[in-house]
Image 1 (cartoon, rainbow, N blue to C red):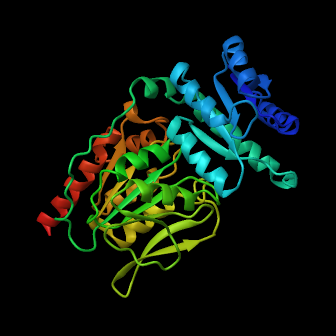
Image 2 (image 1 turned 180 degrees about the horizontal axis):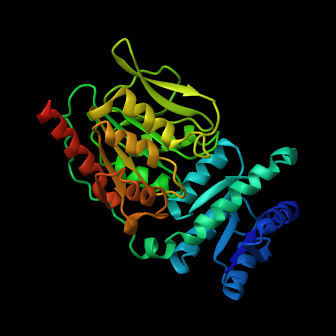
Image 3 (image 1 turned 90 degrees about the horizontal axis):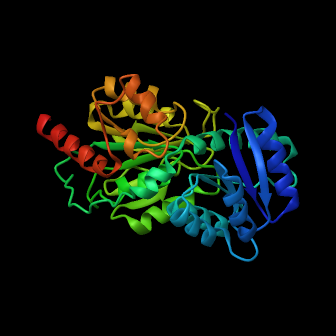
Length: 349
């Protein structure tokens, strides 16, 4: 079965580039294109696409207004096509909060060399979006209970590690907003390109009791802080002079990604061992399963997001099948599971 896609963009060039790129492997069919949200609304009714690609900046009604209406009236998997600007990054994160599955950075005119990579990434995201449970999520919008989770009993040297991909922006927010300001340091690898992670960290910082920052090389990990891997860099945790620090490197892609969840989790297994707790959240593919298994083997508590609450049950499924998780839990319960595990570490110490 082919995946039916509707491309919505006011630029004829971008419509042409996306249409050509999407159909390249034969499993995706562009059933139509639309120049603005009003055109798109009619085409969605007529063509019933599996996935819509949506530009944020368009005439007649901007993409965010249209997305908000679409998710309310006819939940459909949407991939946003974003500009690489600060404003574009803020709007993209808002689109993910409104229900978009994922986003790609708009190809620039001089991207010819990188167009193959752009196309492969876009096609993968379309495939993940087609399998995502957008309708279920819209019907069952998780309201995260604001319970007072206590981690103050966690021992010095404890660490929380979180990894996610497609759907992770919202899942990470659900977990982090429940963690208290005095919890152990949190390190996060979310698949996201350069130019978006600083805004992602800033947005989380606005919403959480924790201080959330984009990780920098050799930054010391402190309680009450969360560190987001920088787009296009691997984040590792290392111990030096008795302190845990961030290390950022631009070495090869791992498990197809940079930042890679496997790279982060493997470093946590080595540097922190049984004093760590880890969570693998929604996302396509298998990045993180190997690293989380290493964490579990080193004595860490590990949890995977359950199928019912994951937008894309790919990474958590592989982690579960490979024995990397101690248990699975819905996203709204993961913070409490991590906190309880930290308290158990303390009582065992």
